[in-house]
Length: 199
Image 1 (cartoon, rainbow, N blue to C red):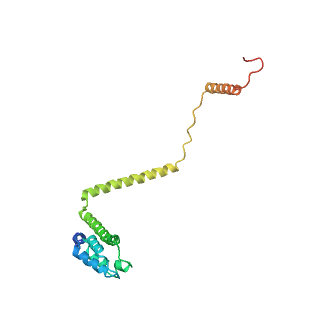
Image 2 (tube, rainbow, N blue to C red):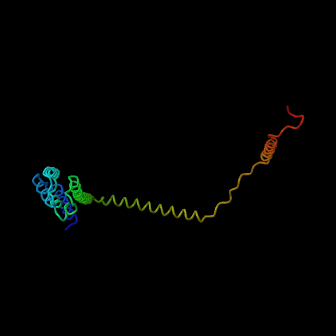
Image 3 (tube, rainbow, N blue to C red):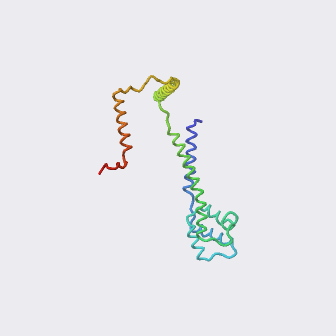
């Protein structure tokens, strides 16, 4: 069987599993009342009638499979709690169980979307692929050529023929005189005038 056909079958099964999670049956008020009654019989003292009705209303609309699990003496709340659980504890337990289905749905959805993206992928025409390949080959050749040039430049001796241009003698003499004057002025700066000089 071609791979595309296998992918389509897998996508169909994934969508059916996601739909089954979304369309799970929901407990009616009668189902919730029966589940609360079973939970109440797991304890020595039965639940108060008002509390039992409130708990049944809170559990209405839950997954019946989760209700059966919650009131099971071994797997549910009764096996972990000495006293009857509160409404908040029951709702917290149901939320944790619902998170399992949420994570499962997310995993199935991600797998389905990945397979769909692969199915929609199409290869470029032969001409386009050849053009891209030729451009890549040219870049590779240019890169190798540039590397060879750098290696040759590394082995080439340095050019020592360059010299600093000569400064004319008149200019050098002038610069020396300016340096002497600046040195003399610097040494005399801040000295006190001799007796009889200055104001």
